[in-house]
Length: 220
Image (cartoon, rainbow, N blue to C red; front, side):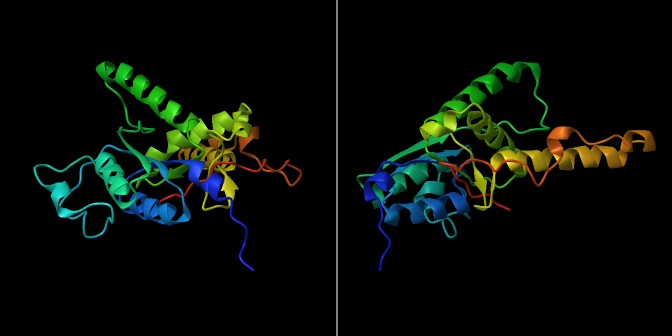
C-alpha cells in the first residue's frame, strides 16, 4: 500500500536552497518530481565551463561571455523544466565567520545579513548546499535563533537537520564545543584546565528538541 501524500502541502512548501552548484542542482531536480515548485536559489558564483557537464540545471550557453549567475540560471532552468514553478534566483554572498571585513564593507555585510534573515523567515525548508563550512555557519545560527524564539512553530525559518539526524541547535553546541577544545589545546596548561562552558555540555536528561518544520542537507 502506497503511503498517503499531502500533495497540496508539497506544492505550497517554500524551499530555500543555499548553493546552486552540484548539490543545489541535484536537490532542485529531486524536489520537482515530488511536486515541490516553490524554490529559491542563493549563490554568488557564475557558471563556469566545467559546470554544465556535472551540474544538471546548466547548459553550455550559460557559461559563455563570463557566465550567468548560477542562482539566476538555475531558477530559469527550473521554470523551463516546469513552467508552473515559482523559482527565483538571489545573487548573494553569505558572510563567513573568520573572514575579516574592511571598514567600508561593514554596512554591506549588515544589509546582506538582513537579506539572508528575511529569506530564512520566508521559507519552510532550508537546504545548506554550499561547499564550505564557514558559509553554512551564519544560516545555521539564524535558523537556530528563530527556533529558540519560538517562531519555528509557524512553519517558517525553523530548525535545520544536518543529515536528518540532529537539530541545528545541537549542531551549533557541538561546533562551540569543538572551538573551545581547539582553543584549550593550543593554550597554556592553565587555560587548558578550565572547565568547558555549560552550554557545551550534554546531559542524558536534556529535553529533546521539538520536531522541526525545516530540514537541510549539508555538503561535506
